Image (spheres, rainbow, N blue to C red):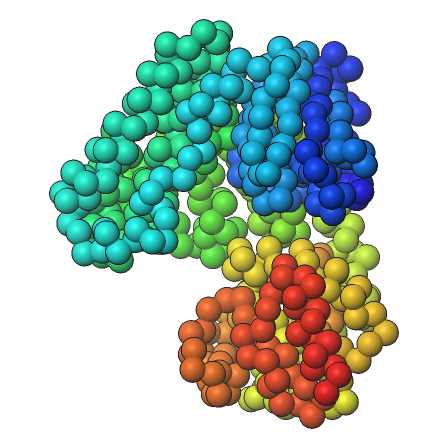
Length: 498
């Protein structure tokens, strides 16, 4: 059974022994092949860094004591099934898992978790399922409101009524109700932004939904779904602000509604410090202070996990200035300093190779030709690309799988000229061993054309991956990602064996 030393483990040491939750149970017919994992959000969102493996005995039994300062919604994960639990300090819960079904058996946390199971708090709505997508294509906002939004809110209200009439504590009723409300907003937001195509309909749905929402939480501390709602609320304000700019002909030098800075200034901020800094401005103008503190701390930790020194340094400075007494400040300082140390350590790392005169490179094949006799795995990415940076976290495993083998890792970055220093800093902070070169949006265009010349799918999205054989030819176009792990390793090995 794998043992993960994570931030979660370090917190465990620091919290008093009394602030614990005991989870125990059994996996029926346990094969010993699958991990049992629990993920505890730091503030919100699912991040692998917050997962730990629960040791399971050969007979399927497990028993773990989890640190918790107060209450946390956690995900118990087995065989790709997610079970939401509410853990509370000094409480216990006994469960069993059989054929992907979770049974709640006993414990002092039984009643609130039975309620979570009864209302199916994270139930995936039918309108988010692939097979129902066609039912909503081409509908106007008015039709969507009648056929989708109002029925979904009615179902949400039924769940809230079930919570209200239950026999759990008033505190837990408020907490769970807050999460149910937030889940509804989040799913409707996701539907509008990912399932609809008409821009006007998307905007109408987003504004109608969130105009009737309240950002002030019903309970503090709120749960992870509330903070996901807060994140979506900021995006709603962005939508509303830019519609106002268009409607009222607000000049680029005039303040943007809800943000208090001009469009010109906003563009400079995003370009220099990234979207998290822009959201910081939005949260300080529109959120309660306690919400801004928690929400922004998660943004800072996300940047730390992405090893984005430039963005985390800027955001952490304004955070500490705004919240000089925050309990998070010491940890933030340690994280920023650790990234600076990584940068210093890799300044002279000869395994990180930036090609000379990369601005003059006209063809990917000219670069690949230098490594004839070896397989080349090409990563086309950008420092601005969230999914790209997420995939980089899996590169150490990939490289480890091909240690001492004839595989070269080549990185083609797409960033504008004014981000050249940021790009070079980023690859060093992240310890991205391999060969690097950069193009901007204009100069990368011919490279995309040659990479996709023999592929029917001409989409130029980021990230994308390509495998070149030992003769320098594209062997696999749009190859698998580092996060695909073993499946990708098989792809590379298949080319190595030719």
